[in-house]
Length: 272
View 1 (tube, helix red, strand yellow):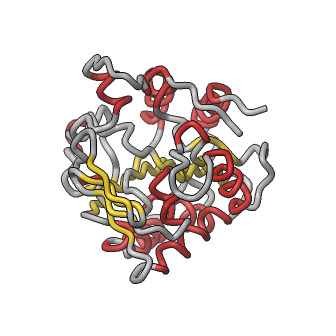
View 2 (view 1 turned 120 degrees about the horizontal axis):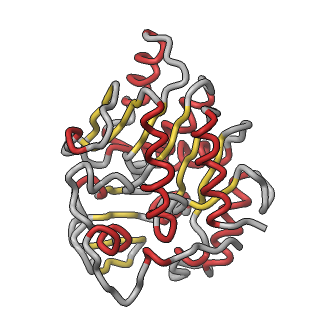
View 3 (view 1 turned 60 degrees about the vertical axis):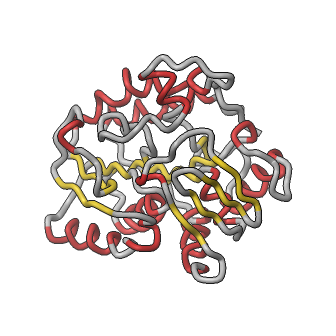
């Protein structure tokens, strides 16, 4: 059986020992792209397929994106490649049934099983985990027990152009900035990072990605070519340090003490 906390500690131990790996997160947005549904995330609205709804909060610019099936099939194909790719040390965090709505043609259980099938791994394979592994109920221990190990590494980051790097508790060795809808508009960042790595013979560095679905492409394509570094999709976990609004429930609840009907900061995600 898989356990949300046990999986978290597994990766803390890898960082402690300096064991290289990649961790790519396939969250609900990635699920909708993989399902070939139109996806538009703006400051105030969410559009999935033909359904458009208002947001309960304000979505910051670094989280906004757009996928149009009529224009961006290559994005879906690249995302599917990153989900189906398998290599020792390449871990895939997928959406769990408690974090999927079940409102878009499949039940949450069916969506999780579909993701596992697309991953080309067995249900309980070691290389499958949760997309929210650093977030929700694990976020406090991420800050206390995982973040400190970042200081053992030379760090390379891919983040939004609006990020305030000076607010981070560590100083990155190299930063690549991306803009709006970077999975499409800044896809060439992958080659820029690859070239920099080759030119500088980069080994045993820690790469931290906070760049939406571009993070999936980076984890996949960089690790497939060079497994001598660690690549982590950190999602929104460092947003408060980077100067972005607390636009996720778990962030508001941890940093601002927000008391809300759904307390993500207490949520221990479940497997299938």
